[in-house]
Image 1 (cartoon, protein in one colour):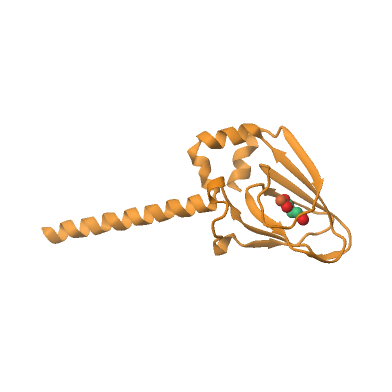
Image 2 (cartoon, helix red, strand yellow):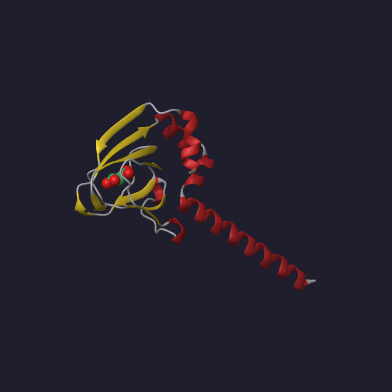
Length: 151
Ligand SMILES: O=C(O)CCC(=O)C(=O)O
Ligand SMILES: [Fe+2]
């Protein structure tokens, strides 16, 4: 969500559209993806999301709270960050037709190279930052305890 909000101001200058064709786990070459379910009668084909990641962490594990599945509804669309790792499960019966629109912004791609605070949208960057803070607090507590004992 952070990524979607942050890119709002940069504008989209490039749109790529195609019919859904792959189901493997991936990130899109887009800032934002619009996935429109055109129908028809089908079962299966659920989307599964496993957390947004920057290039450095694209293969890292998912945390439990990042696991999210979505069942397509004909006539409805889903908007997601291109960096949100996802895939589509197999269609188990019928025919599913989805129109995918990749919205790209080269301005946004440049900005995230230089603006460190944008790293907050990557779940793994956030997790590592929290871990560093936890270790630093633990070390400070330990140090204070040692000093008190030495008095
Ligand atoms: O609905 C699908 O089969 C493709 C899903 C996908 O890759 C996307 O929404 O970006
Ligand atoms: Fe995709």
